[in-house]
Amino acid sequence: MKLLLVDDDADMLAVVGFALRQAGFPIVSANTFGTAVITFRAELPDLAILDINLPGGSGFDLCGLMRKESRLPIMMLTARGEEADLVRALELGADDYLTKPFSPRTLVARVKALLRRSGNEGGTQTHVGELALDPDLLTLHIADRAIKITPLECRLLQLLVANAGQVVHTDRLLVHVWGHRGGGDRQLLKQLVHRLRHKIGDDSERPRWLSTVPSVGYMIQAAP
Figure (cartoon, rainbow, N blue to C red):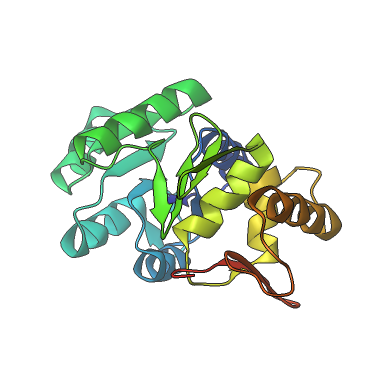
């Protein structure tokens, strides 16, 4: 499960990204038309949230491009409220339209509704090998073991499991776990990984699940 958030407003990216991460969704983001296209094709998100006004192009253009290449749910997120914009977005293939300002609870509810309609509801268990993560219950299942985890550990695992078999850069993990304006740093992330390894019984020298890639980041093994 992965959501793409596109907006040229850094504050809006931070606020919306934080709300969605708190709700348990891994986020990738972009702030221009060009970077959004690259991120969309590289990350293959399950849902996209697009602002209309973007450097290098418009959210309408981006919506049309995405709809030609994917069936993912698309939500337009904009300060505009004109009916003509709503009609144009829907004609281009958008599935929903949310006008700023909005409450984080409304955004999360609309995102979950879109995912339900697409058959890919957020908040369900995420599996990789014998690992099964349940964000709603803050529980990690390993085979027949059920391990209680903290919200920070859950957000860490969500991004790692969503990218199983790939190294996730430290900076991306810091943003996902603590937010753009959070209090996380590399040492806190290292301690968080250490505590999580202890809980799941993993060995840092010969890890079965959670690997460290020095000077880069961390990775969940796709097939341990």
